[in-house]
Image (cartoon, rainbow, N blue to C red; front, side, top):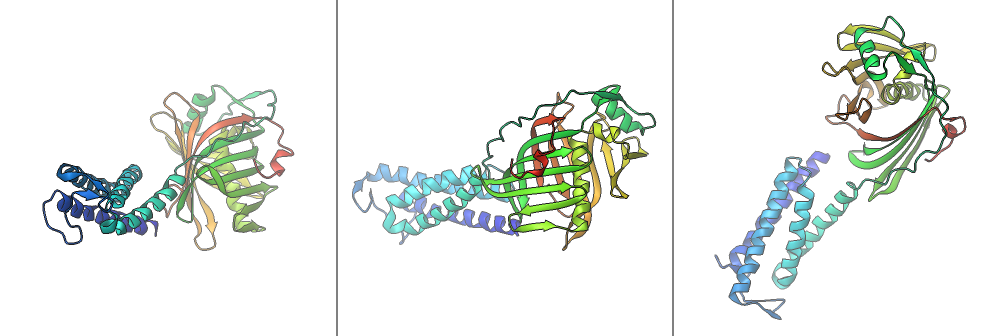
Length: 369
């Protein structure tokens, strides 16, 4: 649906731009157009500009044409610069239509429509400010040896990531910013995820518009049960949602503090090939399985996928999480999540702050940041 609306907007933008050629032709003048009779004054005759001034006025109509047409092409091709191009063209056009109001007022009204669209677009492009730093005090860190018998790509990753010993983490608070897609609309967002390692989590999410929260999500997974406080209601007491939440818990464990995967004795590994392994994580009395991929060039953890419940309409579907790192960092700086039936990630976030091993006994039960 969003793609159809995008195409419609691109077509309307292109047509509106081409109509500006009438102003160029009429006021150069290159042709006689009854709706735009040639004149040498603007503002209903109150501003005399002469023939030279009308040539400049005519050229500006051509410039508006180019702005709208190029914006339409960029929009159709999915280029992000379509919005500033359209903004410049619409502002120029509304000035031209105002100067020639009696003949071109309809164009000004159309320009107002484009400006309203752009107001929405720019509001959905503005990132919120980061959360205030989390103030918990970390406990001293201890380490333990990497266990024997790991699949080759798994052992290679952990030795590259941590050396011969891995830290023992019991909690983490991760603050992030990025984008979330909700009902087909991609919102800027800021997120703070808190984990008690391998057991519980709390998610606090703000979707924003011009940097201000318009939707808030408080989600808890405590004692194997999930409770989601969403803008449209509360979801809880659903075993399928609990299952999906547990997979979210472990996927985030892989992303935020993968050392826990080795120090939690309930997780077991199975080799697949030189760059892939399966990880079996606990879920109540049973297990859930992730296929974990490691980068063949760097050896670092690249992503994982699993079959995960999404909603009543779709049911269980393949869900993939991918990690990206900076050139000089072995820590993930960007995380994305994608459902199999969607072409692009529904979530893309960048990690801005990570605080390990603080006491979350009370914090994980709260709501808000």
